[in-house]
Image (cartoon, rainbow, N blue to C red; front, side):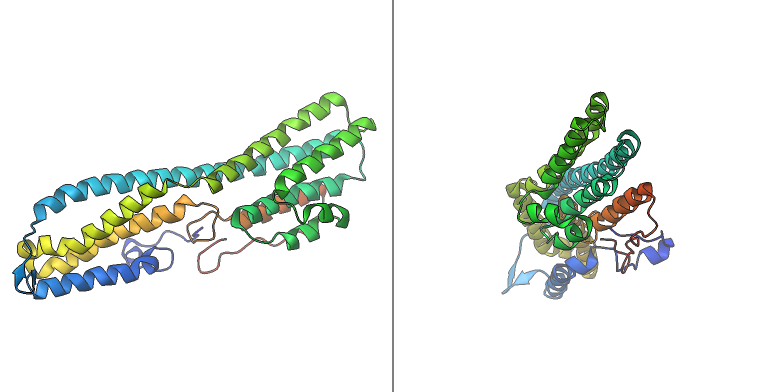
Length: 303
């Protein structure tokens, strides 16, 4: 996630870090270079004039802009749904911690319960990003629990099961009233729902065929555009082609990043920062003073 203050309107025009320009620069340079060559040769290829005008590009451009806008909306919906799911994970984690600290009479198991809950968010982050969760699990879980989880595929789901089993044991030992145990099942059920929602977003991308069609259309449009503009606007063709290509390429690149909100691209969600925040707030509720440091942005990017 890109974190930086809003700049002056003039400086915004030249911002490099935080834009998709580095990603699309090779394609943009290729299109602009082609436009310069076509302008120099006046749209002729081997003494043959390419019979294109700006009229078909006007019609195709409008349709392409509409479909790119639709894809960006679909990608942003996935991004915002992912953010809401992680916001709910924070909320339900705080709720479950508060309930456990105030409703369960046994004080010996508090740290273990809360640490498992903190480990859940880290485990989910690693699962969504395909990274190794061993370091975070080892520092938050005792050895026995870690050994049972280290080879599992869906560690967050098993952590929910461990939390539920601990509540069951304490209810059987009359350390938790049955009616209160039922109330504590509600945030755990919501946590399971949030985990499943994140897994759904991660495993169900936008239809690949739709992405390919838009990609091909955008690139063919931009590479053929100089032939349609050179007779109408002359030497300004490379400038207009570069501007139009930047718009289409940037929209496609941005939607591609937003489509997968749990990755590590600059415009993806800052899952590591959110996990550290969840861990910090739960440890504060335990009354601990040794808290993890907040994740800081590097080159305006928060992971």
